[in-house]
Amino acid sequence: MDCGKVGALIAQVRKERGLTQAALAERLGVTGKAVSKWERGAGCPDVSLLAQLAEELGVDLAALLSGRLPPSEETGGNMKKAKYYVCPACGGITFTTGEAELTCCGRKLTALTAQKADEDHRLTVERVEDEWLVTSRHPMSKDHHIAFAALATGGAAIAGQYLGRQERDKAGHAGAQLLLFMIEASLVIMALFYLGKGFVLNVVFGQVEPDVSAYASTYYLIVESSVPFLAVYSAGAALFRVMGNSKISMWVSLVMNVINAAGNALLIFGFRMGVEGVAIPTVASRVFAAAAMLILLRRPGLALQVERLTLRHDRYIVKNILRFGVTNGLESSMFQLGKILLLSTVSVLGTASVAANAIGNTFATFQCVAGNALGLGIVTVVSQCVGAGDYGKARFYTKKLLKAAYVSMDLCILLVYLSLPLVLRLYNVSAEAEHYARQIIWMHGFMGMLIWPLSFTLPQALRAAGDTRFTMVVSTVSMWTMRVGFGILLGRFLGFGVVGIWMAMFTDWFLRIAFFLPRFHGHKWETMAL
Image (cartoon, rainbow, N blue to C red; front, side, top):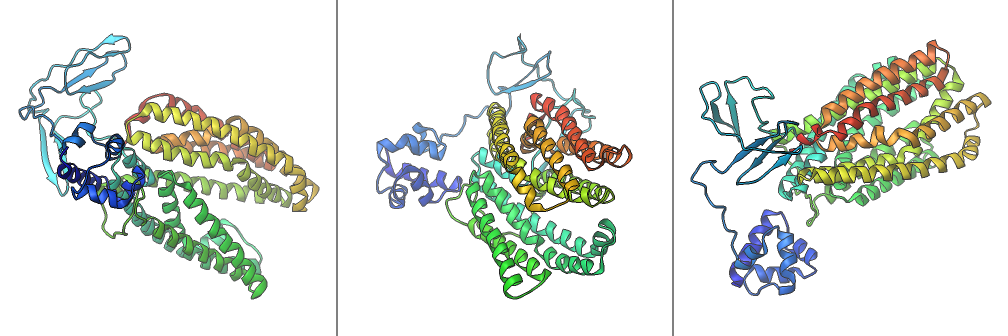
Protein backbone atom coordinates (compact mmCIF):
# COMPACT_ATOMS: atom_id res chain seq x y z
CA MET A 1 0.00 0.00 0.00
CA ASP A 2 1.49 3.30 -1.17
CA CYS A 3 0.76 5.80 1.64
CA GLY A 4 1.31 8.78 -0.67
CA LYS A 5 -1.27 7.57 -3.23
CA VAL A 6 -3.74 6.49 -0.56
CA GLY A 7 -3.43 9.84 1.21
CA ALA A 8 -3.96 11.77 -2.02
CA LEU A 9 -7.06 9.70 -2.77
CA ILE A 10 -8.45 10.27 0.75
CA ALA A 11 -7.99 14.04 0.37
CA GLN A 12 -9.56 14.06 -3.12
CA VAL A 13 -12.68 12.09 -2.19
CA ARG A 14 -13.10 13.84 1.17
CA LYS A 15 -13.25 17.23 -0.57
CA GLU A 16 -15.62 15.91 -3.23
CA ARG A 17 -18.01 14.83 -0.49
CA GLY A 18 -17.80 18.20 1.28
CA LEU A 19 -16.19 16.82 4.44
CA THR A 20 -13.61 18.59 6.58
CA GLN A 21 -10.72 16.66 8.09
CA ALA A 22 -12.33 17.13 11.50
CA ALA A 23 -15.69 15.80 10.30
CA LEU A 24 -14.11 12.69 8.75
CA ALA A 25 -12.03 12.13 11.87
CA GLU A 26 -15.12 12.35 14.08
CA ARG A 27 -16.90 9.69 12.03
CA LEU A 28 -13.90 7.36 12.24
CA GLY A 29 -13.23 7.98 15.93
CA VAL A 30 -9.73 9.37 15.35
CA THR A 31 -8.15 12.81 15.64
CA GLY A 32 -8.01 15.41 12.89
CA LYS A 33 -4.21 15.21 13.04
CA ALA A 34 -4.39 11.54 12.07
CA VAL A 35 -6.40 12.35 8.93
CA SER A 36 -3.97 15.16 8.08
CA LYS A 37 -1.09 12.72 8.50
CA TRP A 38 -2.68 10.24 6.07
CA GLU A 39 -3.38 12.91 3.45
CA ARG A 40 0.23 14.16 3.60
CA GLY A 41 1.44 10.61 2.99
CA ALA A 42 3.26 10.59 6.32
CA GLY A 43 1.45 7.42 7.34
CA CYS A 44 -1.30 5.02 6.39
CA PRO A 45 -4.64 4.35 8.10
CA ASP A 46 -4.72 1.43 10.51
CA VAL A 47 -5.91 -1.81 8.92
CA SER A 48 -8.88 -1.94 11.31
CA LEU A 49 -10.11 1.41 9.94
CA LEU A 50 -9.87 0.66 6.22
CA ALA A 51 -13.34 -0.83 5.75
CA GLN A 52 -15.05 2.00 7.65
CA LEU A 53 -12.95 4.62 5.88
CA ALA A 54 -13.92 3.21 2.47
CA GLU A 55 -17.58 3.27 3.49
CA GLU A 56 -17.43 6.88 4.74
CA LEU A 57 -15.72 8.00 1.53
CA GLY A 58 -18.06 5.97 -0.65
CA VAL A 59 -15.27 4.17 -2.52
CA ASP A 60 -14.42 0.54 -3.10
CA LEU A 61 -11.98 -0.92 -0.57
CA ALA A 62 -9.74 -2.23 -3.36
CA ALA A 63 -9.65 1.23 -4.94
CA LEU A 64 -8.71 2.76 -1.57
CA LEU A 65 -5.85 0.30 -1.11
CA SER A 66 -4.56 0.94 -4.63
CA GLY A 67 -4.74 4.71 -4.17
CA ARG A 68 -6.61 5.32 -7.43
CA LEU A 69 -10.15 5.28 -8.78
CA PRO A 70 -10.05 3.28 -12.00
CA PRO A 71 -12.13 4.89 -14.77
CA SER A 72 -15.02 2.94 -16.28
CA GLU A 73 -14.21 1.03 -19.44
CA GLU A 74 -15.02 2.87 -22.62
CA THR A 75 -17.42 1.24 -25.06
CA GLY A 76 -16.08 2.73 -28.26
CA GLY A 77 -18.06 5.95 -28.02
CA ASN A 78 -21.48 4.30 -28.53
CA MET A 79 -24.30 2.72 -26.54
CA LYS A 80 -24.19 -0.78 -27.99
CA LYS A 81 -24.32 -2.34 -24.54
CA ALA A 82 -27.33 -0.27 -23.43
CA LYS A 83 -30.67 -2.09 -23.65
CA TYR A 84 -34.27 -1.12 -23.00
CA TYR A 85 -37.01 -3.54 -21.93
CA VAL A 86 -40.76 -2.84 -21.86
CA CYS A 87 -43.22 -5.04 -19.98
CA PRO A 88 -46.21 -5.90 -22.24
CA ALA A 89 -48.50 -6.13 -19.18
CA CYS A 90 -47.84 -3.04 -17.06
CA GLY A 91 -45.82 -0.95 -19.52
CA GLY A 92 -42.92 -0.62 -17.05
CA ILE A 93 -39.59 0.39 -18.61
CA THR A 94 -36.24 -1.10 -17.55
CA PHE A 95 -32.79 0.04 -18.70
CA THR A 96 -29.57 -1.99 -18.46
CA THR A 97 -25.99 -1.37 -19.56
CA GLY A 98 -25.15 -5.01 -20.19
CA GLU A 99 -26.57 -8.47 -20.70
CA ALA A 100 -29.39 -9.43 -18.32
CA GLU A 101 -32.34 -11.78 -18.00
CA LEU A 102 -35.35 -9.82 -16.77
CA THR A 103 -38.92 -10.71 -15.88
CA CYS A 104 -41.90 -8.50 -15.05
CA CYS A 105 -45.49 -9.44 -14.25
CA GLY A 106 -44.48 -13.09 -14.67
CA ARG A 107 -43.23 -12.54 -18.22
CA LYS A 108 -39.69 -12.82 -19.55
CA LEU A 109 -38.67 -9.56 -21.19
CA THR A 110 -36.89 -9.24 -24.51
CA ALA A 111 -34.61 -6.29 -25.23
CA LEU A 112 -35.97 -3.80 -27.74
CA THR A 113 -34.17 -3.52 -31.07
CA ALA A 114 -32.58 -0.12 -31.68
CA GLN A 115 -33.63 1.58 -34.90
CA LYS A 116 -31.98 4.38 -36.76
CA ALA A 117 -33.87 7.62 -36.26
CA ASP A 118 -35.64 9.13 -39.24
CA GLU A 119 -36.00 12.87 -39.77
CA ASP A 120 -39.14 13.08 -37.64
CA HIS A 121 -37.46 11.34 -34.69
CA ARG A 122 -33.99 12.87 -34.93
CA LEU A 123 -32.81 14.66 -31.78
CA THR A 124 -31.28 18.13 -31.75
CA VAL A 125 -28.89 19.00 -28.92
CA GLU A 126 -27.87 22.57 -28.10
CA ARG A 127 -26.32 24.28 -25.09
CA VAL A 128 -28.40 26.95 -23.33
CA GLU A 129 -26.31 28.70 -20.69
CA ASP A 130 -25.31 25.91 -18.24
CA GLU A 131 -27.80 23.31 -19.44
CA TRP A 132 -28.25 21.03 -22.45
CA LEU A 133 -31.54 21.34 -24.35
CA VAL A 134 -32.65 18.19 -26.20
CA THR A 135 -35.53 18.58 -28.68
CA SER A 136 -37.26 16.46 -31.28
CA ARG A 137 -39.53 17.37 -34.17
CA HIS A 138 -41.76 14.39 -33.33
CA PRO A 139 -44.82 15.06 -31.13
CA MET A 140 -43.85 13.22 -27.95
CA SER A 141 -46.53 11.15 -26.28
CA LYS A 142 -46.48 8.41 -23.68
CA ASP A 143 -46.04 5.83 -26.42
CA HIS A 144 -43.04 7.56 -27.99
CA HIS A 145 -40.69 8.69 -25.29
CA ILE A 146 -38.98 8.00 -22.01
CA ALA A 147 -39.01 11.10 -19.82
CA PHE A 148 -35.65 12.87 -20.12
CA ALA A 149 -35.85 14.31 -16.59
CA ALA A 150 -38.01 13.37 -13.65
CA LEU A 151 -40.16 15.99 -11.97
CA ALA A 152 -38.21 17.61 -9.14
CA THR A 153 -39.12 18.69 -5.66
CA GLY A 154 -38.18 21.98 -4.07
CA GLY A 155 -37.08 23.49 -0.82
CA ALA A 156 -35.82 21.16 1.85
CA ALA A 157 -37.02 18.10 -0.06
CA ILE A 158 -34.48 18.93 -2.80
CA ALA A 159 -31.72 19.08 -0.20
CA GLY A 160 -32.98 15.83 1.31
CA GLN A 161 -32.82 14.05 -2.02
CA TYR A 162 -29.27 15.31 -2.59
CA LEU A 163 -28.32 14.03 0.85
CA GLY A 164 -29.82 10.69 -0.06
CA ARG A 165 -27.46 10.64 -3.04
CA GLN A 166 -24.51 11.62 -0.82
CA GLU A 167 -24.11 14.86 -2.82
CA ARG A 168 -23.46 17.17 0.10
CA ASP A 169 -22.12 20.11 -1.88
CA LYS A 170 -25.32 20.21 -3.94
CA ALA A 171 -27.39 19.84 -0.78
CA GLY A 172 -25.65 22.86 0.75
CA HIS A 173 -26.11 24.82 -2.48
CA ALA A 174 -29.82 23.94 -2.51
CA GLY A 175 -30.06 25.11 1.10
CA ALA A 176 -28.50 28.48 0.22
CA GLN A 177 -30.90 28.87 -2.70
CA LEU A 178 -33.84 28.03 -0.44
CA LEU A 179 -32.82 30.74 2.03
CA LEU A 180 -32.44 33.30 -0.76
CA PHE A 181 -35.80 32.39 -2.23
CA MET A 182 -37.54 32.53 1.16
CA ILE A 183 -36.08 35.96 1.92
CA GLU A 184 -37.17 37.38 -1.44
CA ALA A 185 -40.62 35.80 -1.33
CA SER A 186 -41.23 36.96 2.25
CA LEU A 187 -40.29 40.53 1.37
CA VAL A 188 -42.87 40.49 -1.42
CA ILE A 189 -45.49 38.98 0.89
CA MET A 190 -44.72 41.55 3.59
CA ALA A 191 -45.13 44.40 1.09
CA LEU A 192 -48.44 42.96 -0.15
CA PHE A 193 -49.78 42.63 3.39
CA TYR A 194 -48.82 46.20 4.19
CA LEU A 195 -50.53 47.42 1.01
CA GLY A 196 -53.61 45.31 1.79
CA LYS A 197 -53.87 46.24 5.47
CA GLY A 198 -57.19 48.01 5.04
CA PHE A 199 -58.73 45.10 3.17
CA VAL A 200 -57.53 42.51 5.71
CA LEU A 201 -58.63 44.41 8.80
CA ASN A 202 -61.83 46.02 7.52
CA VAL A 203 -63.21 43.68 4.85
CA VAL A 204 -62.08 40.19 5.83
CA PHE A 205 -62.72 40.59 9.55
CA GLY A 206 -65.58 43.06 9.22
CA GLN A 207 -66.49 46.11 11.26
CA VAL A 208 -65.31 46.19 14.89
CA GLU A 209 -65.20 48.75 17.67
CA PRO A 210 -62.91 51.76 16.99
CA ASP A 211 -60.54 50.99 19.88
CA VAL A 212 -60.25 47.33 18.78
CA SER A 213 -59.55 48.48 15.22
CA ALA A 214 -56.79 50.81 16.44
CA TYR A 215 -55.16 48.05 18.48
CA ALA A 216 -55.37 45.64 15.56
CA SER A 217 -53.77 48.19 13.22
CA THR A 218 -50.86 48.80 15.61
CA TYR A 219 -50.25 45.09 16.14
CA TYR A 220 -50.52 44.44 12.40
CA LEU A 221 -47.97 47.13 11.48
CA ILE A 222 -45.39 45.89 13.98
CA VAL A 223 -45.73 42.12 13.58
CA GLU A 224 -45.80 42.13 9.77
CA SER A 225 -42.23 43.48 9.80
CA SER A 226 -41.08 40.13 11.19
CA VAL A 227 -42.30 38.08 8.21
CA PRO A 228 -38.83 37.81 6.53
CA PHE A 229 -37.24 36.66 9.81
CA LEU A 230 -39.95 34.05 10.31
CA ALA A 231 -39.34 32.85 6.75
CA VAL A 232 -35.60 32.43 7.39
CA TYR A 233 -36.28 30.52 10.60
CA SER A 234 -38.77 28.26 8.82
CA ALA A 235 -36.27 27.51 6.04
CA GLY A 236 -33.49 26.81 8.54
CA ALA A 237 -35.71 24.54 10.62
CA ALA A 238 -36.70 22.60 7.50
CA LEU A 239 -33.04 22.14 6.51
CA PHE A 240 -32.09 20.86 9.96
CA ARG A 241 -35.04 18.47 9.92
CA VAL A 242 -34.00 17.10 6.56
CA MET A 243 -30.55 16.44 8.06
CA GLY A 244 -32.29 14.43 10.79
CA ASN A 245 -31.40 17.06 13.40
CA SER A 246 -34.77 18.31 14.59
CA LYS A 247 -33.28 18.97 18.04
CA ILE A 248 -31.74 22.22 16.76
CA SER A 249 -35.02 23.62 15.48
CA MET A 250 -36.73 22.51 18.71
CA TRP A 251 -34.25 24.39 20.92
CA VAL A 252 -34.29 27.51 18.73
CA SER A 253 -38.10 27.45 18.79
CA LEU A 254 -38.07 27.02 22.57
CA VAL A 255 -35.75 29.99 23.10
CA MET A 256 -37.79 32.03 20.62
CA ASN A 257 -40.97 31.41 22.61
CA VAL A 258 -39.20 32.15 25.91
CA ILE A 259 -38.03 35.51 24.49
CA ASN A 260 -41.56 36.22 23.32
CA ALA A 261 -43.21 35.33 26.63
CA ALA A 262 -40.57 37.08 28.77
CA GLY A 263 -40.73 40.15 26.54
CA ASN A 264 -44.51 40.27 26.84
CA ALA A 265 -44.30 40.12 30.63
CA LEU A 266 -41.57 42.78 30.79
CA LEU A 267 -43.18 45.29 28.42
CA ILE A 268 -46.78 44.81 29.53
CA PHE A 269 -46.36 44.53 33.29
CA GLY A 270 -43.00 46.29 33.71
CA PHE A 271 -43.24 49.18 31.23
CA ARG A 272 -47.06 49.31 31.16
CA MET A 273 -47.16 49.12 27.38
CA GLY A 274 -50.32 48.12 25.58
CA VAL A 275 -50.59 46.18 22.34
CA GLU A 276 -47.04 47.25 21.45
CA GLY A 277 -45.84 45.22 24.42
CA VAL A 278 -47.32 42.13 22.78
CA ALA A 279 -46.09 42.84 19.24
CA ILE A 280 -42.49 43.96 19.83
CA PRO A 281 -41.34 40.76 21.61
CA THR A 282 -42.83 38.73 18.76
CA VAL A 283 -40.61 40.59 16.29
CA ALA A 284 -37.56 40.32 18.56
CA SER A 285 -38.03 36.57 19.05
CA ARG A 286 -38.27 35.99 15.29
CA VAL A 287 -35.16 38.09 14.64
CA PHE A 288 -33.28 35.94 17.14
CA ALA A 289 -34.56 32.71 15.56
CA ALA A 290 -33.51 33.80 12.06
CA ALA A 291 -30.04 34.87 13.22
CA ALA A 292 -29.59 31.62 15.16
CA MET A 293 -30.48 29.52 12.12
CA LEU A 294 -28.08 31.40 9.84
CA ILE A 295 -25.23 30.99 12.34
CA LEU A 296 -25.94 27.31 13.06
CA LEU A 297 -26.16 26.40 9.37
CA ARG A 298 -22.58 27.66 8.89
CA ARG A 299 -21.09 25.18 11.35
CA PRO A 300 -18.49 22.87 9.78
CA GLY A 301 -19.14 19.15 9.81
CA LEU A 302 -22.87 19.44 9.07
CA ALA A 303 -24.27 17.04 6.51
CA LEU A 304 -25.79 20.13 4.87
CA GLN A 305 -23.66 23.22 5.42
CA VAL A 306 -24.61 26.67 4.12
CA GLU A 307 -21.25 28.41 4.23
CA ARG A 308 -22.52 31.76 3.02
CA LEU A 309 -25.65 33.37 1.66
CA THR A 310 -25.69 34.10 -2.03
CA LEU A 311 -27.52 36.69 -4.11
CA ARG A 312 -27.04 34.69 -7.28
CA HIS A 313 -29.93 32.54 -8.44
CA ASP A 314 -29.50 28.99 -9.69
CA ARG A 315 -32.33 28.65 -12.18
CA TYR A 316 -32.52 24.87 -11.87
CA ILE A 317 -32.76 24.87 -8.09
CA VAL A 318 -35.15 27.85 -8.00
CA LYS A 319 -37.38 26.19 -10.58
CA ASN A 320 -37.63 23.10 -8.41
CA ILE A 321 -38.19 25.16 -5.27
CA LEU A 322 -41.00 26.93 -7.10
CA ARG A 323 -42.49 23.60 -8.16
CA PHE A 324 -42.49 22.28 -4.59
CA GLY A 325 -42.83 25.55 -2.70
CA VAL A 326 -45.45 27.31 -4.82
CA THR A 327 -47.75 24.29 -4.94
CA ASN A 328 -47.48 23.76 -1.20
CA GLY A 329 -47.74 27.49 -0.62
CA LEU A 330 -50.92 27.70 -2.71
CA GLU A 331 -52.32 24.69 -0.87
CA SER A 332 -51.56 26.29 2.51
CA SER A 333 -52.87 29.69 1.39
CA MET A 334 -56.12 28.19 0.14
CA PHE A 335 -56.45 26.33 3.43
CA GLN A 336 -55.99 29.52 5.47
CA LEU A 337 -58.35 31.47 3.21
CA GLY A 338 -60.96 28.76 3.66
CA LYS A 339 -60.54 28.99 7.44
CA ILE A 340 -61.07 32.76 7.27
CA LEU A 341 -64.25 32.34 5.22
CA LEU A 342 -65.54 29.76 7.69
CA LEU A 343 -64.64 32.09 10.55
CA SER A 344 -66.82 34.73 8.91
CA THR A 345 -69.61 32.15 8.72
CA VAL A 346 -69.17 31.20 12.38
CA SER A 347 -69.28 34.86 13.43
CA VAL A 348 -72.92 35.20 12.29
CA LEU A 349 -73.95 32.15 14.35
CA GLY A 350 -73.57 33.96 17.66
CA THR A 351 -71.07 34.56 20.44
CA ALA A 352 -71.37 31.04 21.85
CA SER A 353 -70.49 29.54 18.46
CA VAL A 354 -67.49 31.85 18.04
CA ALA A 355 -66.16 30.93 21.49
CA ALA A 356 -66.75 27.20 20.95
CA ASN A 357 -65.01 27.31 17.56
CA ALA A 358 -61.97 29.06 19.05
CA ILE A 359 -61.76 26.55 21.92
CA GLY A 360 -62.18 23.65 19.49
CA ASN A 361 -59.33 24.93 17.29
CA THR A 362 -57.03 25.17 20.32
CA PHE A 363 -57.78 21.65 21.51
CA ALA A 364 -57.59 20.28 17.96
CA THR A 365 -54.07 21.67 17.64
CA PHE A 366 -52.97 19.69 20.70
CA GLN A 367 -54.71 16.56 19.48
CA CYS A 368 -52.81 16.70 16.16
CA VAL A 369 -49.40 17.86 17.37
CA ALA A 370 -47.85 14.37 17.24
CA GLY A 371 -49.26 13.66 13.79
CA ASN A 372 -47.90 16.94 12.44
CA ALA A 373 -44.47 16.22 13.93
CA LEU A 374 -44.31 12.76 12.37
CA GLY A 375 -45.45 14.24 9.07
CA LEU A 376 -42.33 16.41 9.11
CA GLY A 377 -40.32 13.30 9.93
CA ILE A 378 -41.74 11.56 6.87
CA VAL A 379 -40.52 14.42 4.65
CA THR A 380 -37.00 14.00 6.05
CA VAL A 381 -36.86 10.22 5.71
CA VAL A 382 -38.70 9.79 2.42
CA SER A 383 -36.80 12.58 0.62
CA GLN A 384 -33.50 10.87 1.44
CA CYS A 385 -34.82 7.43 0.42
CA VAL A 386 -36.06 8.91 -2.85
CA GLY A 387 -32.72 10.63 -3.40
CA ALA A 388 -31.01 7.25 -2.95
CA GLY A 389 -33.50 5.68 -5.39
CA ASP A 390 -34.77 3.23 -2.77
CA TYR A 391 -38.56 3.41 -3.04
CA GLY A 392 -38.95 0.16 -1.14
CA LYS A 393 -37.50 1.82 1.94
CA ALA A 394 -39.56 4.95 1.26
CA ARG A 395 -42.73 2.87 1.43
CA PHE A 396 -41.49 0.90 4.44
CA TYR A 397 -40.65 3.97 6.52
CA THR A 398 -43.83 5.78 5.46
CA LYS A 399 -45.93 2.88 6.76
CA LYS A 400 -43.84 2.64 9.92
CA LEU A 401 -44.13 6.37 10.67
CA LEU A 402 -47.82 6.27 9.81
CA LYS A 403 -48.35 3.62 12.48
CA ALA A 404 -46.34 5.74 14.91
CA ALA A 405 -48.57 8.71 14.06
CA TYR A 406 -51.67 6.71 14.93
CA VAL A 407 -50.24 5.53 18.26
CA SER A 408 -48.90 8.95 19.30
CA MET A 409 -52.05 10.78 18.22
CA ASP A 410 -54.19 8.33 20.18
CA LEU A 411 -52.15 9.11 23.29
CA CYS A 412 -52.40 12.88 22.73
CA ILE A 413 -56.15 12.68 22.18
CA LEU A 414 -56.65 10.57 25.29
CA LEU A 415 -54.69 13.13 27.33
CA VAL A 416 -56.88 15.90 25.93
CA TYR A 417 -60.01 13.94 26.84
CA LEU A 418 -58.76 13.42 30.40
CA SER A 419 -57.92 17.10 30.87
CA LEU A 420 -61.08 18.37 29.15
CA PRO A 421 -63.29 18.97 32.24
CA LEU A 422 -60.59 20.94 34.05
CA VAL A 423 -59.41 23.01 31.07
CA LEU A 424 -62.92 23.91 29.90
CA ARG A 425 -63.64 25.41 33.33
CA LEU A 426 -60.62 27.69 32.92
CA TYR A 427 -62.20 29.27 29.83
CA ASN A 428 -65.18 30.45 31.92
CA VAL A 429 -67.56 30.59 28.93
CA SER A 430 -71.33 30.23 28.82
CA ALA A 431 -72.97 26.83 29.24
CA GLU A 432 -74.02 26.90 25.56
CA ALA A 433 -70.49 27.62 24.35
CA GLU A 434 -69.08 24.90 26.63
CA HIS A 435 -71.62 22.41 25.29
CA TYR A 436 -70.69 23.16 21.66
CA ALA A 437 -66.96 23.06 22.47
CA ARG A 438 -67.28 19.70 24.19
CA GLN A 439 -69.09 18.24 21.16
CA ILE A 440 -66.47 19.59 18.77
CA ILE A 441 -63.51 18.30 20.80
CA TRP A 442 -64.98 14.81 21.23
CA MET A 443 -65.87 14.56 17.52
CA HIS A 444 -62.49 15.83 16.38
CA GLY A 445 -60.66 13.47 18.71
CA PHE A 446 -62.62 10.44 17.56
CA MET A 447 -62.13 11.23 13.87
CA GLY A 448 -58.47 12.06 14.53
CA MET A 449 -57.91 8.59 15.96
CA LEU A 450 -59.72 7.07 13.00
CA ILE A 451 -58.50 8.84 9.85
CA TRP A 452 -56.41 12.00 10.48
CA PRO A 453 -52.97 10.41 9.79
CA LEU A 454 -54.16 8.95 6.48
CA SER A 455 -55.51 12.34 5.46
CA PHE A 456 -52.58 14.55 6.52
CA THR A 457 -49.51 12.50 7.47
CA LEU A 458 -49.57 10.15 4.46
CA PRO A 459 -49.53 12.86 1.75
CA GLN A 460 -46.29 14.22 3.23
CA ALA A 461 -44.57 11.17 1.69
CA LEU A 462 -45.98 12.10 -1.72
CA ARG A 463 -44.80 15.68 -1.33
CA ALA A 464 -41.31 14.55 -0.29
CA ALA A 465 -41.11 12.48 -3.48
CA GLY A 466 -42.08 15.48 -5.62
CA ASP A 467 -45.75 14.64 -6.21
CA THR A 468 -46.77 18.12 -5.13
CA ARG A 469 -49.16 19.05 -7.92
CA PHE A 470 -51.41 16.07 -7.22
CA THR A 471 -51.53 16.74 -3.47
CA MET A 472 -52.24 20.44 -4.07
CA VAL A 473 -55.13 19.80 -6.47
CA VAL A 474 -56.73 17.13 -4.26
CA SER A 475 -56.34 19.15 -1.05
CA THR A 476 -57.62 22.39 -2.60
CA VAL A 477 -60.63 20.87 -4.35
CA SER A 478 -61.56 18.80 -1.29
CA MET A 479 -61.21 21.76 1.05
CA TRP A 480 -63.34 24.14 -1.05
CA THR A 481 -66.08 21.63 -1.83
CA MET A 482 -66.34 19.76 1.48
CA ARG A 483 -64.90 21.95 4.22
CA VAL A 484 -66.09 25.32 2.90
CA GLY A 485 -69.04 24.62 0.61
CA PHE A 486 -70.58 21.75 2.55
CA GLY A 487 -69.67 23.47 5.82
CA ILE A 488 -71.59 26.62 4.93
CA LEU A 489 -74.51 24.47 3.76
CA LEU A 490 -74.66 22.49 7.01
CA GLY A 491 -73.84 25.38 9.32
CA ARG A 492 -76.00 28.19 7.95
CA PHE A 493 -78.72 26.71 5.78
CA LEU A 494 -79.46 23.29 7.28
CA GLY A 495 -79.36 24.45 10.89
CA PHE A 496 -76.47 22.39 12.23
CA GLY A 497 -74.62 25.52 13.38
CA VAL A 498 -70.95 25.48 14.34
CA VAL A 499 -71.03 21.71 14.90
CA GLY A 500 -72.13 21.25 11.27
CA ILE A 501 -69.07 23.18 10.07
CA TRP A 502 -66.81 20.74 11.90
CA MET A 503 -68.81 17.78 10.57
CA ALA A 504 -68.17 19.04 7.04
CA MET A 505 -64.44 19.13 7.81
CA PHE A 506 -64.48 15.39 8.49
CA THR A 507 -65.98 14.75 5.04
CA ASP A 508 -63.01 16.67 3.65
CA TRP A 509 -60.69 14.22 5.42
CA PHE A 510 -62.50 11.21 3.92
CA LEU A 511 -62.32 12.66 0.41
CA ARG A 512 -58.60 13.33 0.72
CA ILE A 513 -58.00 9.72 1.78
CA ALA A 514 -60.01 8.45 -1.20
CA PHE A 515 -57.35 10.01 -3.46
CA PHE A 516 -54.14 9.87 -1.41
CA LEU A 517 -54.30 6.21 -0.38
CA PRO A 518 -54.61 4.76 -3.93
CA ARG A 519 -51.94 7.20 -5.09
CA PHE A 520 -49.49 5.93 -2.46
CA HIS A 521 -50.21 2.29 -3.32
CA GLY A 522 -49.59 3.06 -7.00
CA HIS A 523 -46.27 3.91 -8.65
CA LYS A 524 -46.91 7.32 -10.25
CA TRP A 525 -45.29 9.21 -7.38
CA GLU A 526 -42.11 7.15 -7.84
CA THR A 527 -41.43 8.91 -11.16
CA MET A 528 -41.13 12.44 -9.76
CA ALA A 529 -37.75 12.60 -8.02
CA LEU A 530 -34.82 14.83 -8.97
